[in-house]
Length: 196
Image (cartoon, rainbow, N blue to C red; front, side, top):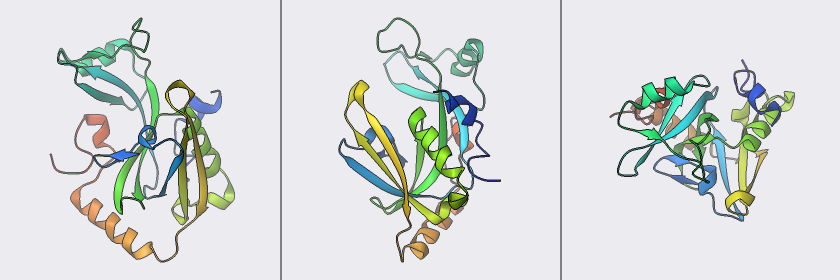
């Protein structure tokens, strides 16, 4: 099954940097880009809502479907409440997301990348649907960011794979898998990088 056809988010977007082991598009500095290779055979599609505890600490809660308010409340338990929107008038909307493991050339390591930006999800699915890009592992990607705040724009381009990097990437991916790296851990709130 191809990367794009495995994603349940294709219908969701049809109409519409890194840290701690994560390659986070919002952390890419404006005017720069990050180069990476997708390692996962298929993405984990999820719907994410952020919870906040009484001290103000935030935590993501992910679902394998678009959850109802009661499902969100149940998963958060009594310890967390939904984070409010920018205006402070209502809870933040549930965001669809696409997660997958990548090899970050800048960090020379396997990282978890999550796209919650509809423009990035749409672009990746568009690239993956082209016959020439059926096997995304044969390509590298450049993730760019321009602007800030509400005027932030992201770009994603498929580019030829770096020559001579295959063995190092394969070794890093094998080591990550041996440690128990798992996308499914995101749905249960466990550590996706293995261990506890």
